[in-house]
Amino acid sequence: MVRKAAARALLLLSASLVALGARAQQNPPHNPAPAAPAQNNYTIPIGQSIGVDAAKKAAAAASAEARKNSWFMAIAVVDPAGTLVYYEKADNTQLGSANVAVGKARSAALYKRPTKAMQDALAAGGNGLRILALEGAVPVEGGLPLVHDGKLVGAIGVSGDTSEHDGQCAQAGAQTLGAATAQR
Image (cartoon, rainbow, N blue to C red; front, side, top):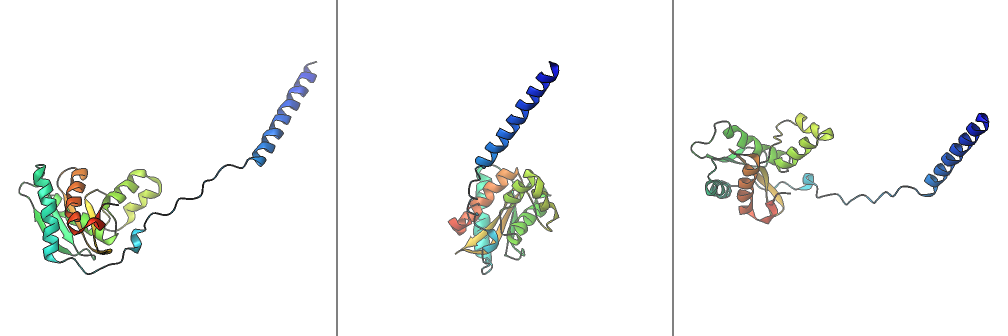
């Protein structure tokens, strides 16, 4: 009697597994089409280097945003190769921010992307940890590429407060060159 019950249970289990296997073959999982790739920062052509007057204008806008909010900031503007074009620092800005601002600007110029993109990739972990191996990459918000007429002309880096505030000031500076520099 026990053997018959066990045989029936085994038979029912086998039939269930066969039915599930057949159903899985009939209804393949839905795999949506891959999303269209986002604009690739690598394709941004390099233009003529930002001049001192335009760099001062970008830094002035970033500085105005910082003063409006009572933040002390260091601001650096570099050309596409990461060479310093203009730098200023508000009185009482923490001393470490001087080098950080230049590093953020260089990182944004050399890698053609906002440093926030690197910050987000690093925060996601996994493959994003590769950011740590990129020479000169500063994965902290506050560095933005400066794009004019669709070409990379330099970058701005801001440091002195929270990274979000640094990014807000960098955005104000980047917007002086036009909407093409908006954070991506």
